[in-house]
Length: 208
Length: 354
Image (tube, rainbow over all chains, first blue to last red; front, side, top):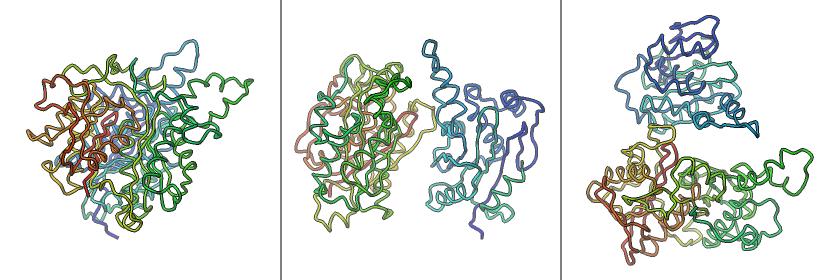
């Protein structure tokens, strides 16, 4: 069934490798997430100093969005772009760091710059701030990549005239393990990449 | 530290709510019970809650008791009545308890989007009714003062040592407050069917973000003006139709500048009567949108505009001043009520005379 929407680009970041539309754009062997994401930033010339203040989840989502949107149409209207992200571990990666900073009743020092990331939707905020997206957004939590959930939620936004394009996908990160799979959904009759739940699922499964 | 504190103790409030024998009630729960019950009674619903949902906003949860008992909770040896409060920490606890107290069995949920929470609760209620999920809702919010919020806002250096002066050139920050405010929203059909007393129509609403900063709002108030414009659009009205704006007006340097710029973006040089009522209540956070929705409705039904207390000097950057005296006998047809949250979560509600 053609719904007039297509997956105009997809980006995957996992296992120290970043790919755009299935083609690897950067790889770094034998590196921690911190080393990898910093090398990716340099390699892709993001030039956004706020990146270094972000937590791991935001860095991951931000980098994936930068790559995803690198070839996007300049004429995108920020107020009509929605963002729908999902993950399994919410902001636990940073929650743990924040908790460790206050665990010792005699020696504690919570940091506002860490605390501000103890919400899973801040990654959406970082992407929206960079790209001036002010459309509808949502942060969903599910056990694993759920293409039906993302598809239905996104279709609802399009069908209600809330968005004219939408950045959607999975951005998950916990204790060094990470996985980002983002898709940019636009209005277009491109049969090859028609926006369907099955297609999201197959891209997610095959681009790993 | 100046705060808008409700003078009664938890025990006195519990007594007033006729809930003296209920256990583990937090202060937001008791305040919410009193306000939601009053709203339900005024709407003639107390005897029959069938078809009525409950949406309550709250930001502080059971922090008041958690900060009192957290070390006792951690001590495995310690037992006592304090253990009853361990389940009250989450923001949803007050909502569930108030719903039980009012015998509400339909859709019940809690919203926390910081200072725009209860405006968003009212919006969600309207959307549920529009989509036929419930016939009517009691929607609003409740919050109480805690050391946690006082210290938190103090560390942000936005608490005023004097009475807050919203939209004044010499404003020094906000005063925190506590309270609860709820409205009863109902489909036109359901209201007519039972001959309900109608204060106003919720004619439009909007929620926007401004994609500017994780915590701060944009100085030009992009998200705020966008929220007001979208609320006008959804109501099919223009800026000229608005008689009064109940401002968010926290009296911080940044909020009032940002909101003031947004007002000028929307209204140009034809700014209607505007005031922040936070001088009366303090900033009640998750309850603010609900309390101010009640004020906005009173303005419409009683033809009265409430003044912006403590105002003396117009802000340099702006070309308008808020209303500094009470205005009685005003013709109030359309009111915008603004509620803006941390990080640029902006909501505007538009109430109209029926």
